[in-house]
Image 1 (cartoon, rainbow, N blue to C red):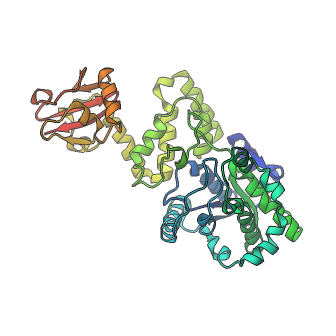
Image 2 (image 1 turned 60 degrees about the vertical axis):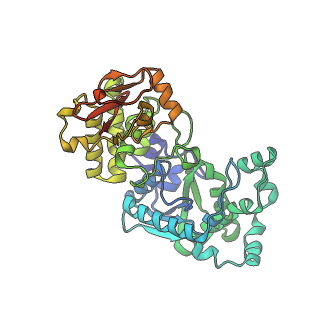
Image 3 (image 1 turned 90 degrees about the vertical axis):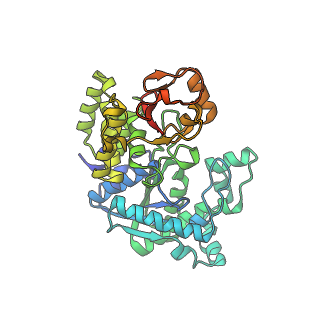
Length: 403
């Protein structure tokens, strides 16, 4: 199967400036850009990263652009202008992203920072050589900008020029590094086209671009930090256990799509897995496979095995007294001092709920202590504990309360 056919079958390509086979079935230089708006990537970034690895494995020369220059500006977004980052934060974020990319994709990957050329470009030179190729009429018609203008939401000149800077990036990489294609998310489509058009107008040569679909969760929200549902690739922000849990707890809806985009499994393996899953969905084989594959790619084999083992222990029916010390370490532990109430224990690390949510859970008979359902909030007493400790349970999730 040709690369273009495989990518289409997996759902990697949404828009392309020319037929996809023209872009990916011939080896060329392709780049992916990302601005350092945070010091970690998240699962929303994984799809383009996995795509770039596939392109590299197929013989393409892949280049990653970390936007030290454009990161100082920020691309337009639906919810208004981004907070501009100070230089110190930007430098910290750049270093963190570079280290993360090298870990995920390989230490020998080629990386560039657009601050290297944008910071040296004079304003008059930029306006004369780049700005004249863009019209306010055309920029104002772009979907996101048009919606902001139509809604009366102010859009700054800074945001308005972002597309010009991204187009200039593509022109620079085309001239200096022979990069002839760019890939990005579907929300970047018009920005990608800016580079294609600029290269044609300035140099009279052809360049190409294509976009990936924005991946959404079951609620239709994209996987991203601005949506409040970020799952970070940095193990300190989202530990491997939490990463594993994110994928294993997904509903059946969308599983085939996620497997095609987020794993390196063959299409045949995925089809067979989905067929088995549909026959016995309660076994959650598809979710478990997805969780293993993604956690392995992000955190490595050892962390994946540990996350899988921790999940098995946390959700097992073993009594607390039957657990080994190693198995106990898989559970968050809340130390009881003074008159600890059920609500305060439920709010503690492990369940991640507020006090009002904890009260609703208790009133709804959703909390148990050592198997006994709690009906009202009260102080945890010695009679609740066995040997000075107990399992506090919310559904199948457990924490240990201990004196």
